[in-house]
Amino acid sequence: MDAAEDLIPKWEQRSRGDHMEIAAIGEDIRWVFVSFLYAAVASDIASKISRVFCNWEKMAIIRRTALSHLALAAVVVITSWLGWSLGTASGSYARVTEVISRPTLLLLMDFILLVLYYVLESGIEVEGIKPQDAAHVSLWCMVIMFGYVVWNIIIRFVGSSPGVSFFGQISVSFGCAMLSSVAFYLFKRMKSAPPCSVLAADVALISLFLLFRAMKQDEFLHTRWEPQAKELTPPLDATILFARIMFFVFIVATILASLRNQRCEAPGPPGV
Image (tube, rainbow, N blue to C red; front, side, top):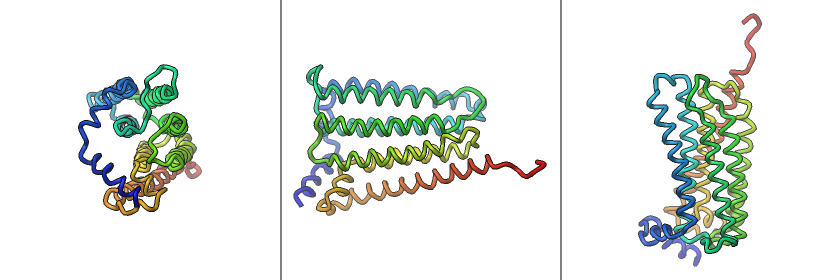
């Protein structure tokens, strides 16, 4: 019961958007440095999206797959920045106060994740005449997911918020990483897949990252791993429902992308 009561003011504070708490993250040198990197990646994604629309007629063949890949990259970067910034604002991560310190490891891991975001975005082509397949994005989405697993291990070593279960966090990260591995195994063979299969693959990957973010929220983890907190039904039920919907979308979109690709690869009748 005490755990549930402790969560109520936390959720209400997040709903109001406490200005004092949000403003404090501007004094965190780690947040300032990494936020510039997030802004740079987001700027590159926005630039590529604008190039697609500015050359809409010229990119008639590849514009659908290019936009779906860029939408995936945008979801990955934006949700990552939001989750990371909210965690920083709530004081969940130890601040960097010395060069040689455990919190510096977390800063290095943040930098590595941003490099992975750059790789994901840089491999999305907005030029040429051949539509992209889902091999590149599925590979780097898988790498990013396993990067989140490493990040959770490091945050455990550095020290995190005592109100969040490490077992719950690492289970969510590892579970989504395994799902991303399945997606990569299925999507890497889509070398000559039709655009609709690529779109379905991107929808599957987008839903996977949204599932990951929904499950990573503190409220969800408290509900999942602490049964006594189930009285917080208004915010928690919505989060859990959203996570379940995203999981369902991931499964359906993955199946549709795979089946559509297999139909296109199936040999035609003799003489055709």
